[in-house]
Picture 1 (cartoon, rainbow, N blue to C red):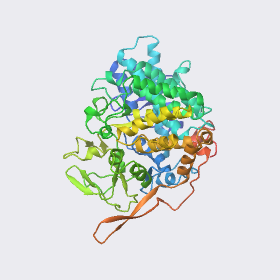
Picture 2: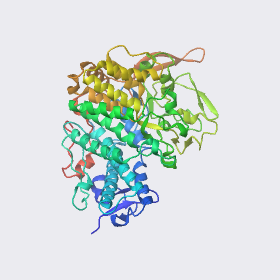
Picture 3: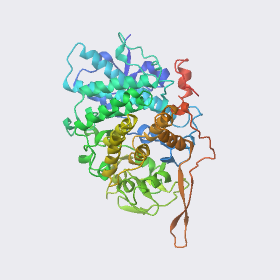
Picture 4: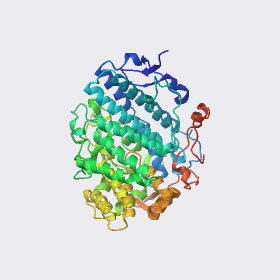
Length: 549
């Protein structure tokens, strides 16, 4: 019997096997067999475009990966419900069944399966027929997206003690039977497999400079190399031999012309002609492959009754900790102005403007609002041109060159080269007009990652949980203690009162506590989060919860 592959070519809603249904709770949308697909370039393009489809949608990268950041002192989930309370209080003892957590798991594994199928099908065709140029590029994109979705799965569920499920369909003789993927022994095994996919992607993909306007936004050679710098950094946390690979990856990006933009502001432009700056490595562009796109994240952050006809959800605020850390670099500096809106500032939204208030409806707030992508809202007549169907039409960065420079700085510090580390740290600071960091280099690395990359790609929590592991205390007790302290504490909020002149004044600073609970306590096992219990049950014992749960 032929294996049925679920495909909806016109709507690009799904490409995965019906045999995954028990494990992944997949909802079929249509079908095609492997024997009737990849007959022409357009079919390859359709299959690949589907793999990008969910990146900017309501859940995964617009909201779900950002719940993780609420475990930190950088960002707060301020609206009761969904996952705010559990992450704000680092209540990871709960099962993985709360709020939108199962959605994250299911989506990542659906798209790993979809990517797996595209890789396998194109390799099978390549074995008998030379692929066209479009099909070769599509194979590179499929490798990249398989690595990327695999990375997202490992962010939450992978640990040195327990890896995440993953298998390459093409490694099987005949067709893969679409059973539950085997769980890798350790997350380092997962990292190795990701690197293999990003290596294959790098070999097949063009440079971002070689894409025409209709295709710019697809994964490119620079995207694969930048992702390798991140994966090698995570791997090196548990294997010192990988630090040189981090340095080599970033050096390669540099040799290919990647560099910092002249100003911080231009990274967050709303003008499509400027999305793909020399700092761009990988992100979700609103004009991805000429078909529009964008991301919901700023819509998710803006308070529901703040913007008039821009009706936000009010899920996330910046913390007072982040504001104060940025302010320490100088009042009104470029990075602070672009990143955070404060109470009393005037914000422009299309044909309207408002003075930012400390409270909106019954929503809790910290007094600080996320500003990085509000350029989409500021234009007269913004609706439809810069803001469409809840999506801000801007480049949302998952990894950019500044990110990679800070990974290289960490690699240099691990190899004992503080001078080179400070050179990279200070290059990032100089771009925003900040003075050189002349203090402890490990503290400088912590500060720069905290401030420079806030609200981008949901990565801060996953950086500090690496540093909080007991293994890292042997490398740098200083950064280890900073990370442990942050994971054991609560972010801060500014409390405002209305004075006699009708102006809100900051009168106190308090821990931000959404629910009356205080179970935050770091332990090494919390490096991984628990799987949804339904998936563990459905696996009949094949899927093991990370140690400690």
